[in-house]
Length: 249
Image (cartoon, rainbow, N blue to C red):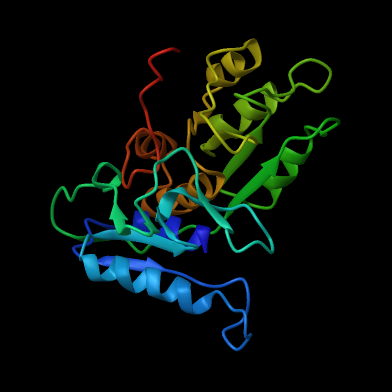
């Protein structure tokens, strides 16, 4: 559901109505199901008429491109990562956070073209750099890498830099995000990240992995030109990315 709400956030720009997703951890027919409550929250958000793509779950509403599932069985299954909640439900009723609402900047634009040839790879110790050659042979058009911490990558014993440059030079966009759930990645901090930037990779900053993957799928559906894709990742379309560095950075 986090992938679905993320990709629709890019496909449906300036949507004039709310589209609210929900679900449950227990089936609707189970006597202890959370489905009915979640449906009420979704209907309450839809009734506000506030445009956008949202996910309603367990007494809260999350901006679609910021939703991440963090629990497999707990009712509080989804969290809003690096972004405030759009709404909460408590004894005071349905509380809208107006600061979390994304503005409409024009007429609705529907861009349905997608490119499914995007691969997500999580860096692990001992990763063989040759895997990137395999991805090229398999005709992947874009790659998202979950790096260590704020953007650490292998560059000594298993040097990825040569492979990254080869891919970028071949017109394959490489997006670097973090394995950490919260806070932003920053490739400019450490040597490894700085070297990656020199190879032409695209930083994901504070985007969720789901948003980074679906944005690349969407972006490649609009253009196969690496520079055009780079410009798209330097644009905030739906609240998916904060391009400004924190004041303390």
